[in-house]
Amino acid sequence: MSVQAEGPFCVQNIRSRPKLHVSADGAGVVGHAGARLLADLADATGLTSAYSTALGPLRPRGTGHDPGRIAIDLAVMLADGGEAITDLAVLRDQGEVFGPVASTPTAWRLLADIDETGLARLRTARAQAREVAWLQAAETHSGIPAVKAGGRELPGLVLDLDATLVTCHSEKEQAAPTYKGGFGFHPLLCFLANTGEALSGRLRPGNAGANTASDHITVLDQALAQIPDAHRHGTVILVRTDSAGSAKAFLAHVRDLRKRGIRTLFSVGHAITEPVRRAIRTMPDPLWHPALNQDGTLRDGAEVAELTGMVDLTGYPAGTRIIVRRERPHPGAQLSLFDQDEGLRHQVFLTDTQHSGGGSAQFLEVRHRGHATVEDHIRCGKTTGIGRFPSRDFGVNTVWLELSLTAIDLLAWTRALLLDGELATAEPKKLRYRLLHVAARLTRGGRRLHMRISASWPWRHELATAFHRLAALPRPAG
Image (cartoon, rainbow, N blue to C red; front, side, top):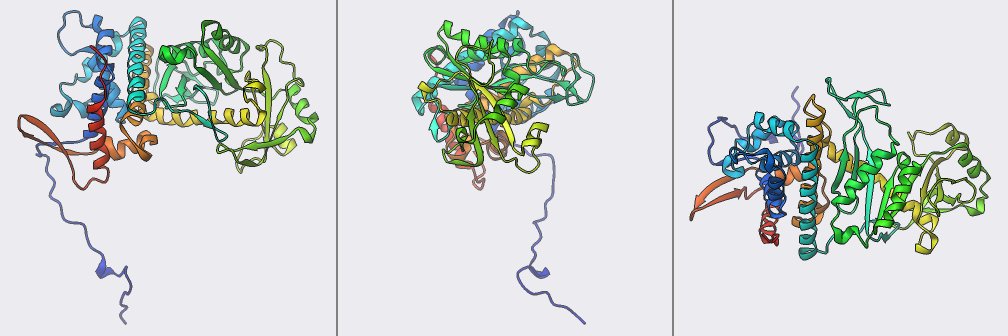
């Protein structure tokens, strides 16, 4: 008995792939061609020249590779998805596109030679380039976008601070056991919610306290130093953190910044202590109001109430308010004993935004909930250098973190200045897959080097347009 296959999936209709004969002798072909976009953007914003000036003292004889250029190549490699210093080979082995790139030992020596003074110079250089990038955004686009919450645009800038754990699989200096039972580092980071730029970061041992006020103050001050003067002064700056940022000393510092002409506000998580529990239990039902979604619609099963006046806030800045949200827990949510007893999940936060500034409890709660986006920034940052530190030396890893922040900035500036549509909000993984890792063919003609992207590549036009926009960007004077 024989059986004949029928329909569109019968065996005789399956076509095999064309046979290939593979060799390693190709010429005139380059991979990761789109990464050249990042290197050229570093030049266009003045970042390369600023880094060269910052690290100039490490090149006393003016010979060999420019230290600033090495730092930029490392940042481009990290933005392109590299995980180790040896991944510089991707750029180095394609000199026709990326020019001379330092060897792995030379890059190692540079990281080891950068001390705290050199790090401070790198941060200053990055701030200078950021000012140029923001001016370019103002001239070619609509400037820095606003953060949205509850269907409204938030005025000014929003800084999100959060810490994360980075596991180390070998013995490294100052790596330590973490509160989750792992082993590694516990860096504290600050991102600009408006654009996804990585403003500052502090590498810390794995056993560093989550709510250390001094670390939060340092990271916030470094982040504010990254913001151009025209935006740092006269612009409302909202500082958001989880409950780790609720230390009174940190909030007092946020308030004191106003004396320096920086209009800072805070919105920080707060632990559910016994006094808070009592206030929640005694809150009358009529004083609970429906919570909002980010688009301004009502959030199903969630309510908001203000506990100000029911909880002792002595020691906190004057005008501090305390607000709580309760809602039905989603499947798999981790609940405290109090939440299990009540059958609802509770989130509490503090803010110094007043009613007169449009600060209803409902709006302030949905504004604070937007802090959760920092977890996406950290997740992407871990694929851009933060998730793996290369050295046993803590100083080298500190420099690596700074270059990782630079890499994140290059990706953010690429989205803001050179891309449209979904790519303008794409995460690094998508940008790498569609643009940065594309292959191209190199040809010469008319005394020019041409990089020809495949005519069948789905995102060829987007990448070509990005290069054209890069060429048209206004350059900093000098």
